[in-house]
Length: 208
Length: 411
Image (cartoon, rainbow over all chains, first blue to last red; front, top):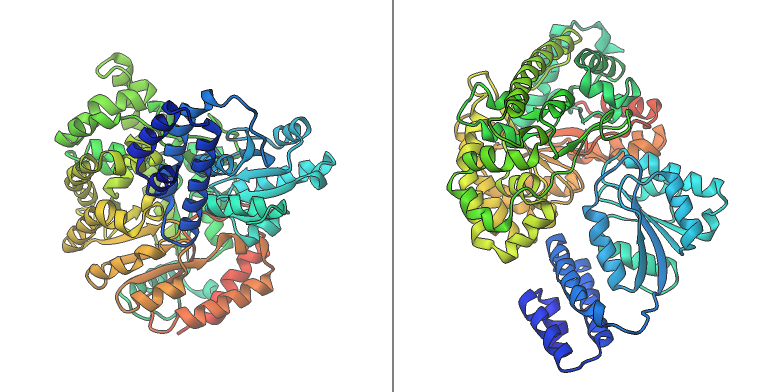
């Protein structure tokens, strides 16, 4: 299993997929394989935060993780309990999703159940999703400066619906910062996927 | 205010001179303030839809903005990224530069899948958005590299533009003729708008356009994440494709040289995604070749270093001194100055989010502190970093910015 973690951390796609198939063939519990891959993504996240890895490494790690999931998900028979649920989407008016999608892979790898609402998500859709899924976290993404106003409007809509206090709101995107957090009324912000996942854990008191 | 008493001619000379002096790494009379927008801040005056589909309105709005906010340079790019069309016509210098950017009506003519527009796919009061897409398969790199221009015209366009699905069909021919009509209207708008702005003392920069080969692959052929994955699965094919793009990109940039172009605008996209190793292997060598070649032709590059460029900043020193303008977004311009001072003109320094959220006093204080560090030695252009300025930035905050530059910007 350590071979798998090492190959994954080194982004050696071929070896990862081969080892996963070998382990499954040898009758290894697919849940343990999943756990090993999650450990690898945590290490990759740490490397990113230390400046050893960059976004291109995250993108490729996401690609490898998705490849592994395709193989092992059908094999996992028992229920995987998420650490928390998150409603995620790119806010209304913005149709960019590269950042959101990178974040989603790593949030799932960290054990979150992610309800992905897609792009250009109107405030009322966020409100409706919070009602239905009762998440701990609402994650709002946006690339353009135009997204700031809809992050704010979405948070206002959550307030009006009486749901704001039930959730923690994190905003994410290359151009969000402390100013945008204050402007929108969010609880946290992150301008990259790994910090985003760490902050999601932190605001729920799950440790970094 | 003092500037009101100057004639438009005097203001034009003064503002452009200020900009040029900074680019030449000198100290002008005052730090120039430049504003770049794709339309977000201009939605204060008109709906997004009008900015891109109604050239008269776009002209009017630009004049209103610079009258309300007398900056030194307004760079209003009210059209979307369309470099692939310039490149496809790079053997025709009379056509290539006219279709570098796509306006709303050009999008209507082509039915391209790269961009989305207010009043079309987006609500009327939005701004245009470039999303790109995957229009080439990884196994097609070889064919692309053999002859990029033919491959784009014959294979990519039919996939990327609904109205060009069948090359040579009446529908596709009509789309190209419509594109030509529109390019002609757009050119007239650019000339008219420059004249409107000159009448109120606002210079327009003599600009041409280039691109980074790897960004071209990410934006127009493989989607950014696809290009990043290709770096690992198909490294030699990507390198070859980047090399094949250098010559046509330079051709596009030089097509405006006879018209007096002095600056080549190059927006970077994948720079902040890459580790120094990947940047130096796949991104920088061909970009550097383009910058150096254009510099040899008397054209300085005007580069948008999008996002966080810190890990790659030292590579800029490999360029000849005075090569052009480094416009930063999230890279701290103070840190950049420590490395690039006396070598590169630095532009940026103001987070747009500060203008949105801070009070006028805080903005005054921020500009005062920033300029006290950035002013000495010259070679600095103050600007909100690369991204747009949000429409909801309060009027008093923009005023506070302009007044702060008046107060603290003088040499």
